[in-house]
Amino acid sequence: MAIQTVGIVGAGQMGSGIAHVFALAGYDVLMTDVNQASLDKAMALIDRNIERQVTRGKTTAEAKAAAMARIKTTLKLADLGPLDLIIEAATERETVKQAIFEDLAPHLKPHTILTSNTSSISITRLASRTDRPEKFMGFHFMNPVPVMQLVELIRGIATDGPTYDALLEVVVRLGKTAAPAEDFPAFIVNRILMPMINEAVYTLYEGVGSVKSIDESLKLGANHPMGPLELADFIGLDTCLAIMNVLHDGLADTKYRPCPLLTKYVEAGWLGRKTQRGFYDYR
Ligand code: CAA
Image 1 (tube, rainbow, N blue to C red):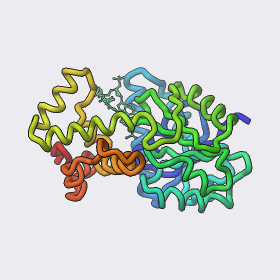
Image 2: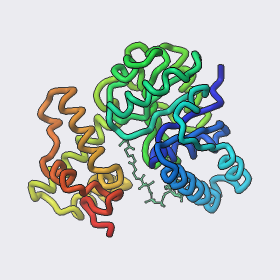
Image 3: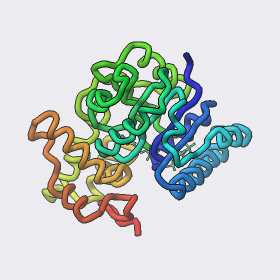
Image 4: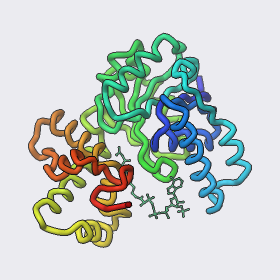
């Protein structure tokens, strides 16, 4: 059965970006969060970001109006139960994600596919706590979702072929490219990206370069669109640290040891753009 109705749990940066691309691709979207203010903020952000695409000729005003009309919001998680596909994009904490899947369980239809946008938590473990590990997958979008072409499709140990094929079809309809990945700590993108960011923080910590020289080196010397410290601020230093901890714990190799300076920034509450302060000062 082709997927048409999509439930998104979490209206943050990722959840709103995911709602944006699904609605523009013609899916009916129902987005939920724990408070109305987050949902209102997400709708305003989606409106602004699609408007930006209209201004730059990437889409039309008619397509924007149709997409906005396809996105509905609710404060009741249970309302998502009857939909074809659920994408959990809540806080990157395993207990939070597990609680969401447990609360959803009694409301789901037998055909519903469950997915998580987690950037590093074990898909197999999340799936094992649901009634349908064969219909559970990692569905990992990159930030900013409307711009980044890639979606990681992560199979848990029990994920079946039809579930994989259904999500692959969705990625194609979104106009994006799928990277199939097996379920090991941090999958593909973050397995490679986070040690690079962590190494950039060590380079700063050891005084090899300044924030400016480290970022400029990678931008001008390796053609990266953002320097690694600027990118860390963009992703969130707490997220970067959490992913390094998943790599360190899951692969038990000291090469993944989080840089003490990264830990210190997180302890200070300097989490990057979202708190106005990280390696850069946005105040
Ligand atoms: N919605 C819609 N369009 C957006 C957008 C958004 N949220 N953000 C940017 N854009 C569009 C702009 O309108 C612009 O469009 P045109 O090409 O048509 O002009 C284009 O994207 C470029 O944006 P800007 O001109 O504003 O700025 P920029 O050239 O500096 O690019 C950037 C911004 C796209 C974010 C770029 O710096 C970049 O690619 N950075 C790296 C991002 C990255 O690596 N993301 C992955 C993070 S890792 C991750 O997400 C995984 C994880 O689990 C942590």
